[in-house]
Image (cartoon, rainbow, N blue to C red; front, side, top):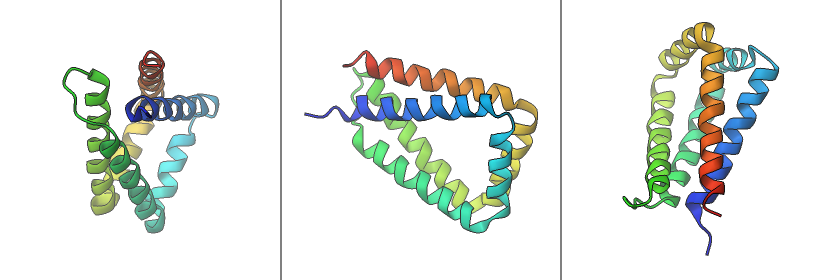
Length: 129
C-alpha cells in the first residue's frame, strides 16, 4: 500500500528545497517571477488554478490522524494551499503586490525559511520509510 503522506511530504519537501537552492543560486529570481505574474492576468489565474489543484490533492491524500503528526501537518498544508489559491484567484492584484513588497525586503529570509521547511519535510518523510 502506498503511504500518501510520506510521498506527498517527500515530493513537496524536495520541490521546496530545489526552489530555494535555485533562488540562492540566482538571487532575485523569485522577485522577477512574482513581477511577471503580477503583470499577467492569465498567469495569475493559472498560478491560482495550479495551486488549487495541488492543494486539493495534498488535502485529500492525507488523512487526519491525531497520533500521526506528519499526516496532520500535510492535511493542514493542503488546506492552506487551497485557501491561498482562492485568495490568489480572487484578489491577485493585492496578493502579488503584497509579496513584491515582502520579497524586496526579506528575500533571503523567505528563501532560507523555504529551504529549512522543505528540508524538514524531506527528513520527516525519509524517517517514515
